[in-house]
Amino acid sequence: MLQPTSNKESGTIEYTIGFFSKLAPGSTSSATEIPQDILEKDVFKKARKSTLTDLEAAVAVTPPPDDFVSGILGIQLHEIRELGVMKDNMAIQHSGKGSSTKPEGEQEIESDKGLPSSYCTVMVNDEPVYRTRTKPMTATPFFNASTERFVRDWKATHVCVVVRDSRMRENDPVMGMVMFKLSDLFRDGSMATGSWSLQHGIGFGRIHLSFVFRPVQLTMPPSLIGFDTGTVQVKSININLYDKSLQGDVEVRLSTTGGYTKIKKGINEKEESSEDEGSNPDSLVHLPIQTRYHSALVINARNKGLFKRGTIAMGIVWLRDLVDNHHDGVIRAKLWKTDDFDHIKQNYAKPEESAVGNNAEAIGEVEMKVVFKPGIADAHEKDMKEDPKKQKSWEEYTIMKRKGLRRNIGRDGAAVDEADISPNVLANKVEEPSQMKHEATNSSGSLNENVKQWTSQQDNLSAEHRGIKQFKGVRTAEWMADGLKNAMMGLGHRKDRKETMEKEA
Image (tube, rainbow, N blue to C red):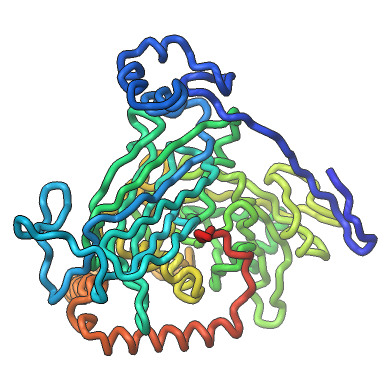
């Protein structure tokens, strides 16, 4: 624990520094000694014939351990073969392995003016972590680029490699992508190498990749091995003020210290459904989070009056204390009355701790059912579209969602709730009589379904550069409009932390 170096600053910072060695395959304590039972396996002896060392062979045939889920993930991008763009809205025929069909005897064209200038972006748990250099106008780009990342939980981690075409006066379109769940990739060993077909873009080809995972001798609590990006779902909330005379004069607002979404309307009474909580998306508040481990859910108890507005008490739930996809827990936090609410928002404290700061008085309690859903969700749309650095990630998310790749996010395989709802209000809803609601649904349901279906079809066509997007003039106009909009937003956009995506030198 350290004290500030300046007399003008107050507070302390507590941290832990440690060195954690890698573990040998099948071992729980040694970094070098491979257990004898692994050395005697037939699969090890077979792998040893094609590897240089015993360690490399053991890594190839031994899955990562269940007890030590944190470690170093290495990713190497070798090359792409037969890379091309589908033209004239004609789908290129592929063989069973994904290679394009060419007349017998025809040689592959490796470089030409009409070929794509490709680059790859690697995303780990929906966060872009690495980008290769652009390989201009070639159908066989050789990258031979690699990166390493610390992974908190290999069982919950997914990796997406996206290939884009760098274009002049156009937004770089997605040529294709491949997505992996590490729990599937490392089912038979901690190393995987292969070629995969590029899908869900405007191009085709086969990308050659290698993955390796080495666990480290580190165990962390479940709340610290989750995703940084996700959605906070508030399923129910109950406010209990010790002074019952204030109960009817107080409304509640929810916000996050990450600065992404605020609830503009209040919550007066307990909101709970007798049905399955996940089956009624209208009863949820969805708060998007992209910096989970230094963010908190802030509960503001405010005066309802027109002239007596302002925060009278505040409660804090730090998101680092939540476990991904954990539905059963009920969180209780005290509501504190103090002269310095910024002190509460800036300083970490567990919900059960009695002392939050100087001159803090507990005037009530809040009881909530809160779930942290890992990964990008529809609630992130507004923030990611307004941030030029996040727009490509949002585009990639929409493609993955449209192609059904978002159904296995997180450790337990629970999908992020993708209900088409806005992350706004939990309460202050007016219940309609069941008969009126049924009639309204019948009259407008078919129209809404038709509009959604038409919108989805247009999005699919645009993503594949079909329909109106097949004309370069339209794509150039969109690029100019996006550039102008990003420039205008950049003037007033908040300053974020330095971008963490590594770029190939």
